[in-house]
Amino acid sequence: MSPWERARDELRHRVPRAVPKVGLVLGSGLGDVVERFEARVDVPYGEIPHFPASTVEGHAGQLVFGRWSGQDVVAMRGRVHLYEGYSASEVVFPIRVMLALGAKVLIVTNAAGGIDPHFATGDLMLISDHLNLTGTNPLVGPNDPAWGPRFPDVTHAYDPKLREIARAASKALKLPLHEGVYAGLLGPSYETPAEIRMLRTMGAAAVGMSTVLEVIAAAHAGARILGISCISNPAAGLTDAPLDHEEVQEAAYAAREHLGALVEALVSQVGE
Ligand code: HPA
Image 1: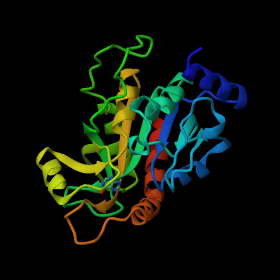
Image 2 (image 1 turned 90 degrees about the horizontal axis):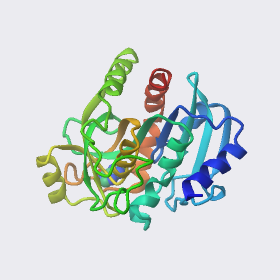
Image 3 (image 1 turned 120 degrees about the vertical axis):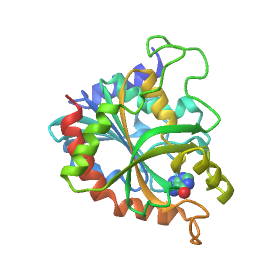
C-alpha cells in the first residue's frame, strides 16, 4: 500500500464522514475559518500516517473535516513549505490525500506580499496564474499515471469558471477582489527590492512562499483549483516598513472575515 493510501484509509477509519467534495488550504493567519464548520472533526497532522508536520509558528497543523455551506469539506489548517526542509513531494502529500478522499475542487489560500502598487494590506487577490520560481516541481521523479500524465497541461490550472464564480461572489458581497499572477519563491528570506522589481517586470502582482507546488500537484490530478491571496504587506522596497512575519500573520488574521465570507459563498457553489 502506498503512503497516501495508508493516510487516506486511516482518515476514513477515524472520521465518520470523510467524503469531502471540496478541499481547502488555509494559509498563515487564515486557519480560524474552520470555526464556521458544522460537525467538525480535527485530526492533528502528527496522527496521520506519513503526514509532514508544520514547523512554522502560526501554522497549526490539523486536517479539519466538516460541513460548510451545505458541502462536505476538508481543510488543511496550516501547510508545510519547502523552506522548512521538506521535499516538493512531501509538501504536496496532504493535497494528494485530500484528493484521494474524493475532493474534486481545491481552494488554496495564502498570505502574500503585494507587488502591484495599487494593492493595500488586507486586500484579496484572485490568482489568475502563477510563476513557479521555487526551482523544483512536485512531479519530479517517476510519474504515477494513476494520478495524471507525465507532462500535464497547466494552462487552465486556475479554473476560469471558478474564477468567474469568485468574481460574482465578491460582487454580491461587495468585497473588492483584485486578480493577478502569484509568484511562488523558495524563501525563507523575504525578497530583495531588486527581486521585487524583477518579479514586477515578469508580470507578478503578488509574491509568497507557498501554493505553486500544491497547485501543480492538484492540476496534475485533474482537480479544479481556485487560489486566493490575502495581501498581508507591501512587497520589499515598496515602502520603508521592515518585513516582519508577525505583522504578516496579523494582517492576514485581520482579513480572515472577508476571506471567510468569500470562501463560504464559493464553497456553496463550486462543489456541484
Ligand atoms: N514575500 C514572500 N512571502 C510572503 C510575503 C512577502 O512579502 N508576505 C507574505 N508572504
